Amino acid sequence: MDQHALGRADERMEALLAIDEDVQRLVAGDWIRYRTSPGLQELSWEAHSTCAKINQIYYDDPAEAIRLFHELVPGAGEGIDFRPPISIDYGMRLVIGDRTFINADFLVIGGGQVTIGADCLIGPRCGIYTPNHAEDIARRLDGWELPEPVVIGDNAWLGGSVTITPGVTIGDNSIVGAGSVVTRDIPSGVVAVGNPCQPIRPIKG
Image 1 (cartoon, rainbow, N blue to C red):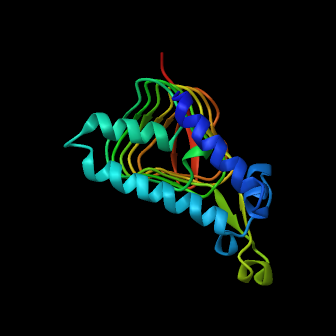
Image 2: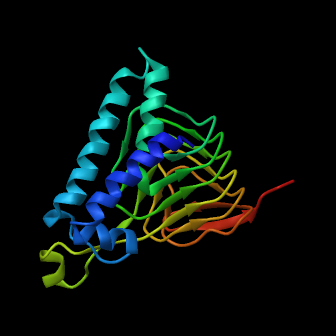
């Protein structure tokens, strides 16, 4: 973990926390209104700008791309390998364990805390969605959304084009088949597939 990048991110967050109620709600895990929050928009725009730089320079200057990635995601561990393009809304809300591999078209939407364990394999075109918009019509029109956490355990393997919805936990060592839509928790040590995704058998061996 890059302690200097983490310090800069913490300083910026502290400044925004002092002036923006929606940033305060984000950190508290409460309902937010992204569309009316200058602080949340600033954070996501900066993150998207950094993602665009990473995607542009990755093959010409991989060392700088990796440096920028760790600046974007201060909670990223050692030995992480990824392939562009990536798109992350809030890098400071993402934690990635050591030696995890992330394939192309990795997408993290919304401000829910996302924790990915060590030694994970994230297939291409995987998306992690953390916000639930309000079901109530008036509140939805007012822009209210609830960011919910997502947890992926150590040594999990997500096949290509897996979609993970808000509030889901995937246990250690589990495999999620390609194209699955994960709408509920998946226990440790299983193979799970489908839409909605569900366990079909324990891991062999």
